[in-house]
Amino acid sequence: MDYKNIIYEKDGAVAILTLNRPDVLNAYNVAMVREMAQAIDDAAVDGNIRALIITGAGRGFCSGVDNRDPAEPLLGVPAIIKYKWRLYPIISRLWDFDKPVICAINGMTAGAGTALAMICDIRIASDMSKFLMVWAKRGMVPDNGASYFLVRLIGLSKAYELTFSGDSIDATEMERIGLVSKVVPHNELLSEAKNLAQHLSKGSPIATQLSKRLIRNATKEKDLFAQMELEGNFQRIATSTDEFKEGK
Image (tube, rainbow, N blue to C red; front, side, top):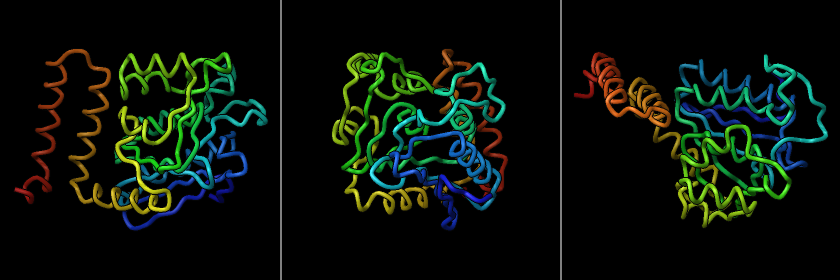
């Protein structure tokens, strides 16, 4: 595919998807979503790829939807779903993605861009990055899954505070409240993300895949013993593989 709105490249076992509309702080439009979906699908089926990095070009990671872009049906999403939900195909793909996904937050992030960052498994941030929780100031509510991820990452009280206030938070605060796991100097962000991705790619692919499914399931499973039963089932799968036998 000839990508015009993203950059998609591979570095050994690591795929790197860079949002590439820096003139609008990587606001997404229909074309970008289509290209992102294609790249994620490619990384999902490529047996040589063991981890995915998502980042942005220029000063922003993702400023949300490009309001200049006309609404239209996208990738099977019914037309009745308004255009501000257009990131749904990406959120659903990343939710089902069985390999580690690292978000390298390189700058300002707002609206649906925050949901895109939060669905990633691990977030590291440039010291120049900032989250803009602007929904309330625009008479809007969190969308594209932002409310789902926000409360799970930072807890109920802080999620209420940031959503009601519409305040922005800088990289230091993002790390303090657990929204990101690490803050690094801006010019070291991509190298740090690559180092982490390469480190994670050395683990057992099957164990990593199953562990990710367990953790995702734990965000919605209310029954401890149902989760434990799933753990047991997955453990039987993991310990029956050659990877387990070779690692003993």
